[in-house]
Length: 374
Image 1 (cartoon, rainbow, N blue to C red):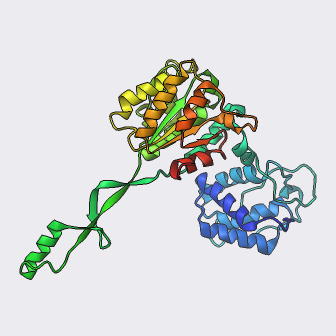
Image 2 (image 1 turned 90 degrees about the vertical axis):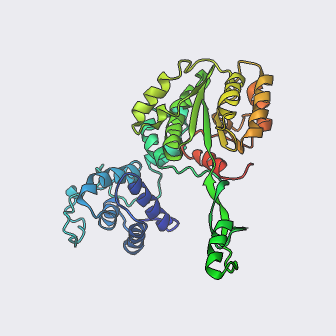
Image 3 (image 1 turned 120 degrees about the vertical axis):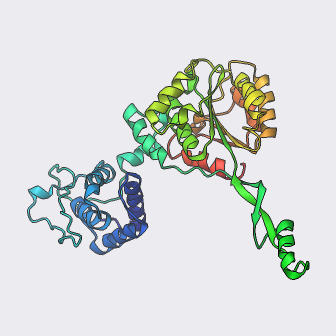
């Protein structure tokens, strides 16, 4: 039986979002029907929940296999599902009006017929809070699919270009003169223009030195998604800086990651933060890449070079960029203090300081890119 404290709408919405992310054609209206069915039927066994979801959320036969897989991932990890085949008296759903065969089966059975509370976190939910450095190769691959669904929303700025607008602040002189020809030279109409808005550039610089190796692959997925979705600029650094925008622009993640690692020969080497930032400021930032952009630096702050050089280059970067976001996975620890030479030198010039150590913590990173400095 579903616990009274469980938010049925939230269960339905999250499950619908998970199906949609997996490629099943689920709409918000279908999730609403699923929530209404849960409230009306109050399923006491997971197989009953399965059929409610099946008849309200699946309309295409080709989606059945993926539906079964996602259902087992969400509700099968911590729940013991009763086997319908071993219980012939179990209720079956009514025939579908769309003619689809209800041939999907729920998960497996372990002999326990007790009612279950559908409020436990699935394996994927636990994966969302698991630190990247504790994830296996398979878990990182599953995280990649979750990261692909993230939406990065950079802040917007006024462009130099303008467009016609009735609420514009400036008069469109050319349009006004053209209109005046039709009224004997008298400018009866005064069309107006306003500046266009466009998203700010996003620049990501990821530390791939030895101390950041456990987090390197996860953040390469973020770089790959940002380059593909936002045309962001992506760099990695250890002892020197390497631009990976071209390598990460390909659609296949595996190919993009191999090309990115091949382009950085000092991968998993030492860390020279100050020297890498100087390369960026002297080269790419001065050419306009960093000017007015949101710059995201992913690093634990360990510096083998001179911290004074890092402080100097961070001060230069702060003047050029619209916002500087520093992502340090070590910040997740309650005992963490930014006392390392590099981190202590850089922090005064950082607008937002977040951990970003897990998928859920990525929300802080996205909010820092989109929101005001903190």
